[in-house]
Figure (cartoon, rainbow, N blue to C red):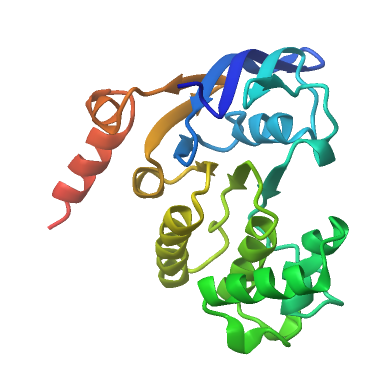
Length: 241
């Protein structure tokens, strides 16, 4: 079975600096790949290239077997979610979620049904009329998720989406996302620098370091790799009395 996303020999250079070096990656339909990497590893650049916000220096990107590296972002049916919710401040929750559907010129009835269903999924029905400045950080991120997923993208790109949230809200958002992946059959790349989050969120794991990417065959293979950081993490927690 062909993967939904397939990247071959992707490289990116800014001036004399090589940010990505011969990246190869595959993602199956309705699966989540966690991409683990520290700041400056190249993970955000990779997401921007997949989304069409940056051009690769070389390499190919296939989405459903179609090469898309020259397609403009709006034609890729890919949604990029940042750490910041980036809601429209002059729209209420309902209209923020409806925005992409209105751009696609869907009927008012279809928009109403889809937005109400998304509000229900996200458990924010009672906040539908609120403005963004009336929401907590976690609520804003739920709205951002709703706006992204209601347009049913082929691929969702998440760039440290819970990084700005407190630990309690972060755990709630992780649980919500896992539930939505199952309900809505989402395919996603989930970028994080947090080892525990990468393990929790992904069906599989990749690690990017200094522009080079390793994609593991399984989580077990990741755990067994001495350079993955898992052993250090376990030893750290064992050492705390």
